[in-house]
Image 1: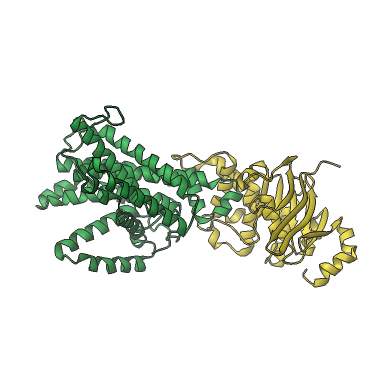
Image 2: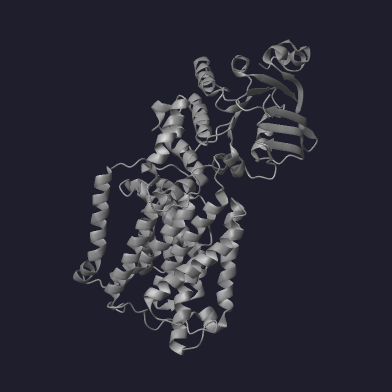
Length: 338
Length: 250
């Protein structure tokens, strides 16, 4: 595993050229559904939607892991909780049953997304407050343990499908927008992803981001200049959880299905791989990591059923030989936030 | 005589069978430079750790500015005006010298739960940070990454960061250690310029520096103050010569 505290190379390109490239990338992402239909590959839109959504989760993990040095191995929990918020609210919307004694069921995306973000943030705050009493390997293990606890909670939650999960028959509705159209939902997801990445970009350059980067490099130094580090780590952990909740809620809509698998530790591992593969502590690295990982998985799985045998060594090689992640290799995707 | 800024009374700290701090009493008056000398392993760094709240003493009292600070966390003590430099540097090596200092300025301006504005463009952070770098003699290296600075510059940066917290008492843990002759002179000059504005507890082996700066000297051996007084008295004290200077440590 690459050391997340590794200093990546300085930006190779001027900020103007970098902005131009980001703008170009954005245009490319926006027109992607048209290109896909031109190329006669409509399935690409669904794949791209998944990547865009997972990139949100990876970017939010990156805030804690890459910038704050908090190696959380339980990120899938907040992602899954966000998904379940959508699933549970939809179930109650369909059946009309009360939730906590209130008619809370809804299929409105503008309600379910904030609700998912909020609930995931609350979960992350509760479990983070306990986990952050530890550090190092213990922190990794305790976040893993808590996430697995939440996983088994949903497995046992028979009222909401237990092991089988929940089906969301129709995607959440958005006023004036047909979310059932796959290209439209791709754009909706892309919008939230761009907003989240823009937010992350601001955060890592802010006073909060500077403190977070300081915590990663030396907590002792931060204490000695008068910074009580715990509350900043907790805030980073909560924001990280909220981003995962947003991603989970979008994924529940995209897949129209929620299951405990979304909270499984292997999903947490995938998020970590995305971050490290793309470049921990870089702004766009996690997006790149998500694209490469999901792209490879899809491609290899279409090719052979033993795709994991190929993917594993491939990932090891990529991480070994790129050190600072793929974005370090490309140089041009450097976020410049440090 | 003015009320002491720092008053330590009967401080004890044991690590297993070893007494790191043994009935240590000492005070620092406002604006004074109080040097703490002693052979390696005398417990000087452990003492600073206890003053900063990084290490909990077993017993004893620490009063700073008239209040008992023993229950306070390190950040809370920093807020009250204590600051330290580290003998073994503790810097943010991935950041520039300026960013290291600016972060200390930022910490002094209250909470950092500000998520949107770009901190590196904040003049209220950069201007004071540049002043502190200049005071430590490091103005020319503001935009160099801390990792790329020399050992002497690391020491200067340690000092600049401590200054940026606007301390009333600076705890200097061997600021000259490992410095060349000219770097040492620079550091002494920098400290001399600050003398009077801020009180200092100077832990140092470099006797030239100690005698150039100190108003008072205490000698620590095995966690115990064996002598304390004006520089001339200490120089003449036979017990000190035996316990410390005699070991050839200086």
